[in-house]
Image (cartoon, rainbow, N blue to C red; front, side, top):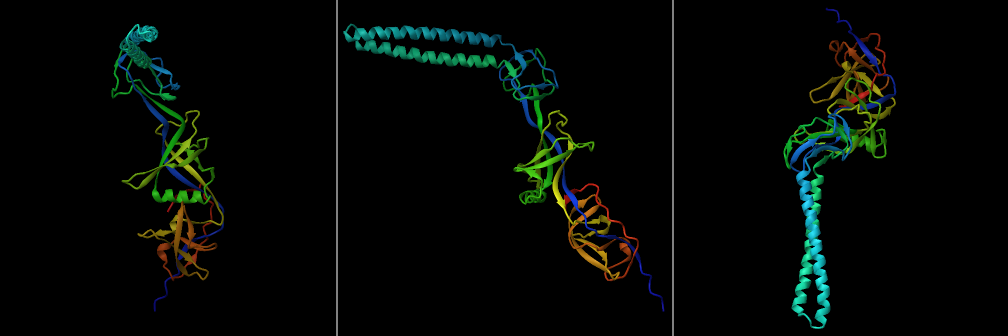
Length: 362
């Protein structure tokens, strides 16, 4: 009779109580708070460009000056027309005043008096029209000075002094981007958004009034020194992928954040006491997403546990259900055992508090 097979040796991980800080980490890119193209509103020749490409400009600062000569001539003409219309109105009003006295003594006919009143009214209307023409000419003259629509950093100029620009042209003269504050847009699944909104409503996320505080890691891994806020109102859903874009707002007084940078948002959710963490090599996920683990019981019998995992934290799973404190989870030698069998535990792997609790929900 053959001897029974030897009892396999396995390595276990003993569940120990711990308090961990939970974070949600979102990948995103920076985008300017405001962006505006500089476009001409009149046709003319550029005679000056008093700004330096790549510099910071203020709203309404002069960026381009078009040749004002033809617009100044038009303004002067309309101003003269207004003066002529006012003179005609004065003459018409004087005639109405004379006829008013003469018609009372029947020195002139009522029809003549009515004609004089009508002429005075037409002269008054002509003054109003002339005023409008002057205002239009003044607007056109002012538009030969092209100012900055917003404050921010201006890019390269598409045209130089001497170039002809036209109203409605498709090419912008330059582009200004306001980078303080700066947006950070991160893409997440709808389920993740719903979880964040639920945690926010339950007070699990650290926040101010109606805002969630967010920290930022730059592309080189360094921490951005200023906190931002997550704007749940700035959420858009991509109909093709079913993902959402979460928008956070960060102060950027020193312009350390530039448009298009790859960054990572860190949302601090708080702390969890008596958290259960299991090394990932001890957890198996089935095709349907269900998680299981093999546990070595007190009688050294192997038990199958069905787990509900919350998220990955470093190289461990955060487990919400299926394990308890003191359980010995088999993390090495899984291929040697099966549920209901017997195993001998090697020296247990000591529990380790995770270095960073950045998380993705599962």
